[in-house]
Image (cartoon, rainbow, N blue to C red; front, side, top):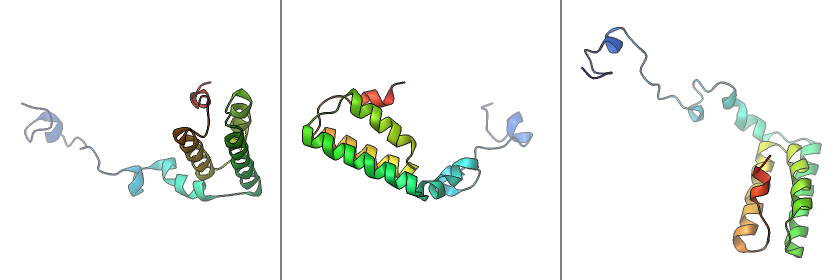
Amino acid sequence: MLPGSPGSPAVAAGAAAPSDASPASGEGAGPAAELPERAAESTAESAEAARRGHELLAQSIAQKRWGAQEISELRELLAGMNAAQRLEIMQALAAAFNRGDLRGTMSSLLLE
């Protein structure tokens, strides 16, 4: 008899079936369900970190350079941003690399 079939011991004993609830539905998501709210929160500090991050990116694009110094500075700034701001700056950075506006490596941000 196959597991999960009507006559199997697990089904007969009333074992829980996999839930269709997902974090996006809000059911059973736990702390992850709070992320969209927290992602929207912005403080003066996070707004300043985001502004400085975009400024760093603009300067780097103007110089066509992305190196260890820029990576280090962006890491510090990312720590002060909320989730939405981090996503926005990382998308802008990836787009700059994809367009060829920056030279260097983006993978260093993911290491450590």
